[in-house]
Image (cartoon, rainbow, N blue to C red; front, side):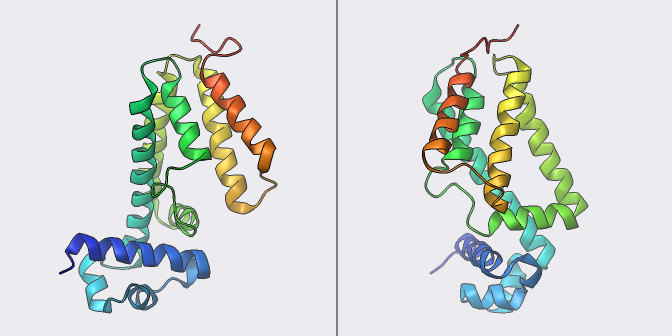
Length: 189
């Protein structure tokens, strides 16, 4: 018998697939329920409405991203820049099963634009991530630059704004990791 958390996850994955195919504006509770093979009442048991569903999609993305970063930290040791390298790695090459689904980044942006409370939660996450960047043993300006570059890659890929691909993307990733390893005077002054 399927548990409540399994149904909730199935609903979130269905919502992400639909958001990727149809866009968040066309995401309806009925369509999500049908995609997940759950009754609308079953969906409403888990989510009181569309805003709560989108909020859960966003928070799942945040949790998956943080889990990916933490997994990388466990392999990093204690060298300066370890958090920055984990953040860059999770952005460039999300671990299988931890990265956002195709429609999820769209939901992140839509939710941030339409839900002040959720936008506030995302701001708190980014502030926490930024604090960790600044306290990672690297020059805080360099750490911030690397976070902004990783975030810029994510947005450029999301919107198709001439993101680097192939060999260039690999070189950019490698160069960011080198800088986060203290190359070119990257240590804290």
